[in-house]
Image: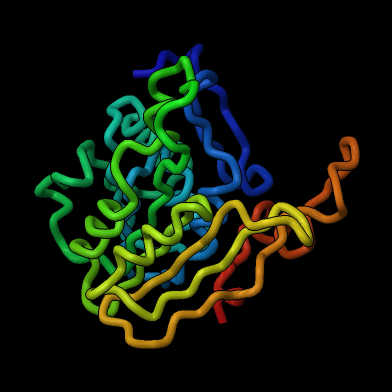
Length: 252
């Protein structure tokens, strides 16, 4: 487990959520906030966060939508412990279990209304982080198809998968959806207007039959380049990343 002096206390959503995170290791940034904003969960529904880490995505979602039955699965015990601590300190109940998504613990073998996932998307090889926990959280070990398959098994009929990953992982995710997931919409995430989208948000429905939709890009920053210390989020990104707004409108 992480020692207290190895943790930072970080603010999310303008301080409405506070997360303990390792000073050295995988640290949540914008991806889990965007993921939570894109999930169309409603109060009273159940949500499973695959690879929940320290709990950022599930807790952001729980803050926006009170009354959810939240659960998380995390491979690394130290991060699972952090997720429990973060849930307790923010007053948002989350059932966190340790385990591999290819062998989901018996306690989570039930149907969920939603599954959310932020899989690692940096390719293995190259120069991994010297911090083993960070490398494991960020570099691809389990293929994206396995994440989709695990999510599909846990979704009830009509349930939704919401996933964020690198744009280069999109072909693999799309190939893994059939035959059980459909009604797929993809929202490209562009750092700035006119820049290639390096990440995507995807939503797909179990049993869905609607046509595939590629949506207009969601632009994160204003301007052509970073301008010193000035705030550069677009109004839409600011609403999501600072105010916890719902991204569902972007999906139509």
